[in-house]
Image (cartoon, rainbow, N blue to C red; front, side, top):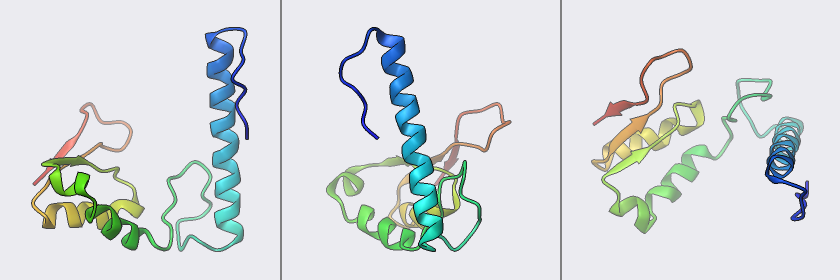
Length: 111
């Protein structure tokens, strides 16, 4: 999806971006499901995908200078980020994880 750089106003531009993001998400979800890139849970629609390779991606992220320099990292509570949360704690990082919807606080602090 392509977002036009010319807009008649801020609201039009915001709507175009939101529409494009939604289209890209739907396309990625369909692609990942059709190519069996996700072990579970299915369907993907509305989820952050738990994809094959998420553990490898977590190891790759932990090897970056930015990760090594960080004292605290924010990690989503999704299933695909489980390895990243574990590794962050293993490397002595404080981990901020937002709760699932319905809670009245911003983050869990894991350390």
